[in-house]
Image (cartoon, rainbow, N blue to C red):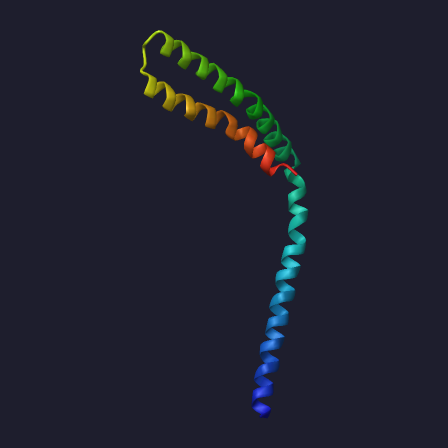
Length: 102
């Protein structure tokens, strides 16, 4: 019985040491993230730009599709497929912003 308790205490000690080492490692990492403010602002600027550009581009593409369908350059089935795809792609940015913005 005594041998079993010794093994159990060794396992507990190594678990505690491992947990303490991991905690210490993870506590010091947020200090390194302070230098990423420039990258965060850049990514926010890109996100804002894309939120503006994507719906405008989708509108222009839909307009071109409508003109080409009216001019009988493309068939109705092709127009419908492309139009639905462009509408979904154009609104995807807005939908994700609605769903994932706190």
